[in-house]
Length: 507
Image 1 (cartoon, one colour):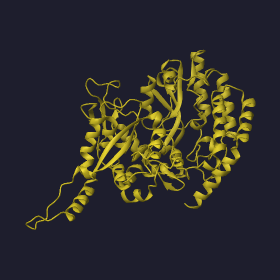
Image 2 (cartoon, rainbow, N blue to C red):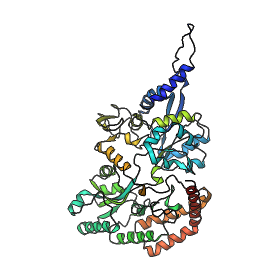
Image 3 (tube, rainbow, N blue to C red):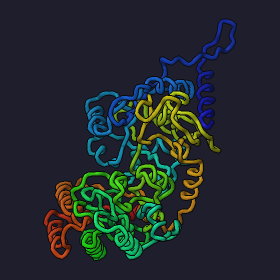
Image 4 (cartoon, rainbow, N blue to C red):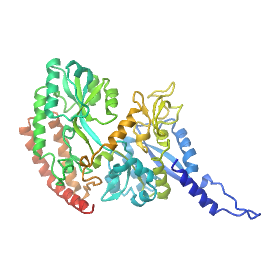
């Protein structure tokens, strides 16, 4: 285990400080648990505290206590309250060491002064993080400084459309998993499906009130922010570093027209802009062909499981990398942490070659789960629920995978050990020309915060209507674009360009 070297160093230091016995012999003191530094770690949950949390905490400390000289207190926080509770704990001076940054990026936490810089700690203690995360560490930077450590197993994303395998077979249509398909290719499939199934059956499932299908069909680098802040329209892949409005572009206009045409042809249901059911729930109904999604590695099994049908990916974007892909789940150290060194050593330990990431994610073997098959590396295994345990009564199972190196976290049946091979192949196959030139850049919208809020509201008002094809783009698109201008879109893009140019000059 990599951290055994650290143990040896700690023991050496203890010996150097040891007292002499009456006989003059040096005595090796025992580390007192009272000297352990307590690390309070936020634990995001889906609601109630897991009944087995105390047992998991005890098992965790049995390993990391002697190894690192720390005692970890797991502090459960409901996902819905994660940001507000964590920032409140920091601002009020309550003890919190490890902050879980979930789907927000570090910007909101920095605006509250909640995170400390990690560059020096990463350089000193982050060897296992660096080995596990590689380029994904780019997701934790802000204004050129590192504030969070991502927990990401996939260093690239591909996107496309998942279609039901049984329907593709009925239509005698097949797709190459390594090919990239176009609007026209999808439309040929949609036309064949509608011709066979007719009224009441639809091609595209999804809640367009919260979806924008454009980014499933085109590489768009959102520069660590959102589509409303300005983007690189070529995904940062072609050397272009000009920040533009996605919504003012000719390509977005073509997309708006295509969505409207698809709606007129019945490929998109009339209630798409107001239907609040998830895309997977809609597909379960049997009246939908499929949905847009990311398509890499484990998504085939995930979509098949969640949709209730075997699903086939039809790629529209080949695997590529941008900063925002690494901002989903991250860990930061509280600005009020009293021992950042110990806290970061524990954080690095989560990414080392041990099994505590499985412990923190799934709980205790034999209690919450049992092993079906083990892989080559520690932590890689296929598991199932333990006897008498299911998703409803398991004492511990964190649905949000946020801990450590996800390439060594177990997968549930029916997934297989092939997942780890596919993940490794994906991560090792990304050419430089599929990596955005802005990896590590994150837009700071603070100087234009009022405009950013106004523009975001406009986007929320219109983009769902356009994705649903609910209104004629000849009418709604000019309204949308004018509203963006009036809300201050140009000021945001100018500020984003200014920051990006300054960042590029320092690279």
